[in-house]
Amino acid sequence: MRITKLSLCFAVFCVMLATACSNTKPTKDMGELYSLALDAYMPIDKGLNGDMKYIAIDMSNFKDLDETDKDQILKHFDKYNVEVMEATYEQLTAKGLHDPQSMVLNGVLLRVEMTEISNKQMVVEGSKYRAGDGAIGTKVMVKYKNGKWQVTQADGTWQS
Image (cartoon, rainbow, N blue to C red):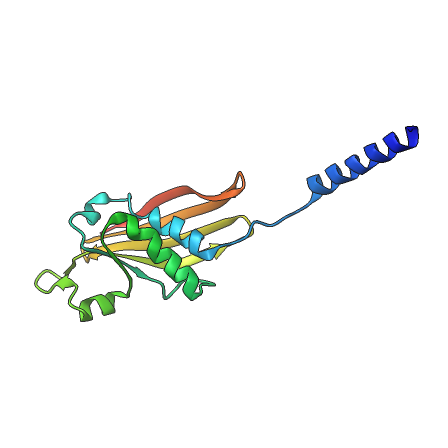
């Protein structure tokens, strides 16, 4: 009986030690990470969002993205009740999705210029663009906290 209790205590101690010392890495769902970061752009300078007809996302500088991630990002922005598409500025103007007189887009274009990814953090620097004199630079930090990824900082870095 004493050996059984001692064995049970030792087993419980080993399990506790193993889980306390495990260095599990958070999984990086790139679709989720970019969705969180890009969505943090939207409340920065809400004036750029006024009367927008679409949200375009330029994914040409995204890291480690596959088609499933791209679809996940686009679907995330459905909550804004406007058309959501993957497009560059050049593609938008070629489609006529701007006012040719003022060169103002009929929606907003979200871009990423730089991404730094580590084990528990992602920093995204980019921009939200509407026109040459209607754009902002952004810097968003997404961290793994309390078992999930969340935006911890989102700031404007420049304004035109």
